[in-house]
Amino acid sequence: MSSISKATEEIINRSPFLREAMTENLINISALARKIKGEIERYVGKEVKEGAIVMAIKRMTPGVYHRIDIKINNVIGGIGDFLVRSDLVDFTFENSESLRMAQGSLIQDIKNDKDSFFTVCRGITETTYILNTKYTEIVRRLFANESLKSHSTDLSSITVKLPDTNTETYGVYYYIMKHLAWDGINIEQVVSTSNEFTAIVKSKDIDDAFKILMQLKRNA
Image 1 (cartoon, rainbow, N blue to C red):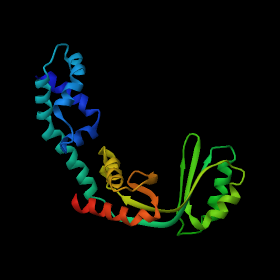
Image 2 (image 1 turned 90 degrees about the vertical axis):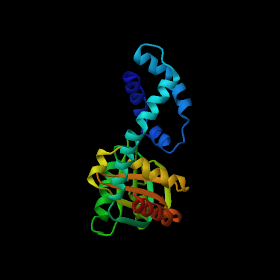
Image 3 (image 1 turned 120 degrees about the horizontal axis):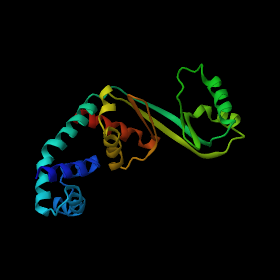
């Protein structure tokens, strides 16, 4: 049984979100046992009864899942201040040799504005700039020769300050975004550093997003 238990735990450990669904009784244990039966048999090198797998799943549930919930709750409970910014826009341009030069000029133009919001997310093929609406015309002028891929207006941001332990706890970002999604809030962009998480949403959704995050913190 020990090898069956070990195989079961390793297979389920590949998907921490499956474990969460099991904790909330959203997964049929017998159906899951049937699904992973073949893989477990290959792992242990012999035929395994479905009932043994069901037993292994039930035995691991209280300890493993409860520890994960506690870790996430500890992180969420340790959330610091929320910072909300409104009246934002974003621009996404295709990466090019001249894009960095245009970006440098933009930084020079806004560097003395202490109240500015400015974030750059550079990907392999494109770069997104999120900033105050008042800089729209400056961006259009400086990036006039760049290939614009998308542009969104009427955005707001909510920044969550996370405790240092968030980098050692998997599922934290998923936990936050899951609750926003369940309430029908679409996240336009996500920006993160080691201990900060910023969600960019439509301005019409920012009040609801703030209430949800505050509720998560209170209930942790």
